[in-house]
Image 1: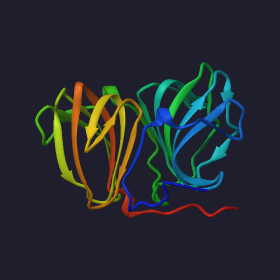
Image 2: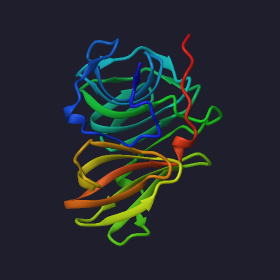
Image 3: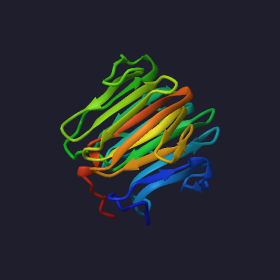
Image 4: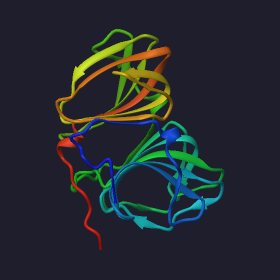
Length: 225
């Protein structure tokens, strides 16, 4: 299966317009944003766990990165409420579930094979610092030689223009953002290739945005079997 698999193309997904697709586990559905592969896939998705739903224990061969958007995600290591950012690198394993239901934004099979940095943190309690643009503050969630992951707060009307280096991915967590001719609202997603230009401005209520840069220079997909 391939969905938005050409990483040289700019992609915008208004997630509320995308159908939920059932996963192999009852009560767990997905909105697929990009995908290379079948059930084992290099994938970016919004995943919804119904109340009481779960997945069996599994190991992350290519790593897993996610943000809890709504509700509380759980596994045997603890509870992860909305606003939690989690990185489970290759070789980690868990039994995911949600007792009361939750929605997460998740990326699979997109880690460096040698990454072993496992952690979780509350993005709202992160240390935000003034950015290179007035009225925008940012907190670094993760940074290595391949990628930088941040969460940013944009005041109403705050704008930015930059040339994308190594690719860029953006998810609106709260508020609204205009990017070029596109109006992006809560849980809308934008992916831009290396060398593209981002011109964006926050809406009247500002915006909170998750951003990943640099990672599209290191594209790979899992081998089935």
